[in-house]
Image 1 (cartoon, rainbow, N blue to C red):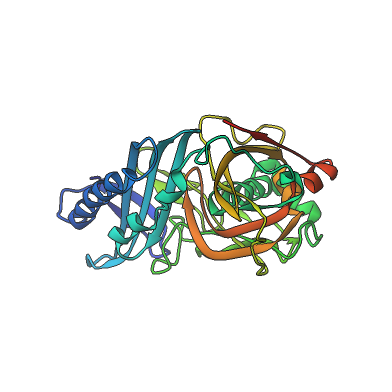
Image 2: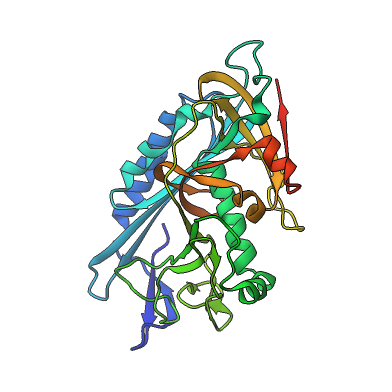
Length: 335
């Protein structure tokens, strides 16, 4: 457990920090241990079992020691027949409820139905990216608009429609009860894409997007958050009955590439035959893939891994249409 006391000036800017041994945060430490225990128990239902788990409970207090907010982050690495898979989620409120939100039933690997691969017409069927792989496209698009070069692109394309009716928001890491980041700037959601149109980039303050600065005790300075937070919104649509569902990404391969593309190797299943499992590899530029989106389906889910993205399932065009556009490569691996 690491407990820091931050010193702020009248504008809310952090001017220094020191480690303390006061009992503040002991409840968070207790919650962290209970989260790890529940995660280990839940992972026993997944194929291959648990490899590792990390639970973090962050708490914010006011100057009088009153708890302002609490945020829980949970990440587990589980072995499946197709390879290691990450299960992660986050949220505010009761920490122990976070462990119950991990969908262990999605950890089954390919080949649940022996000798049966994807149907012959799988390329014509629409693709549905469940929240875990959908989060990769959302984060990849956000990174392309918030990186140093991406900010120039966002400034140049501001106002231009580049996506269907999708909205992508950059969320602050500071809790709503705090209201400001560690440089004292208002910490508010920023819209990167508004109903398909690029928005101008958020101004920088001391090299960090306004409202996103986080104090680092070890360096004694503010910088960007270690984990960016985003939210993908869009019009409702139904999951097609014959869809190919990309359930969860398999780890161990480079996901984000220097040329702006993403490569996802995902556990997949057929919506009308959920026992049939195989692996789909999808590669393309996130923005180009999202241009073929039909909408979002199901409840919003917080996906916590290499970024923290809240999204619903993303309904895309089929593999044949994606490849026909010249902006994607989709293939199937069978066991």
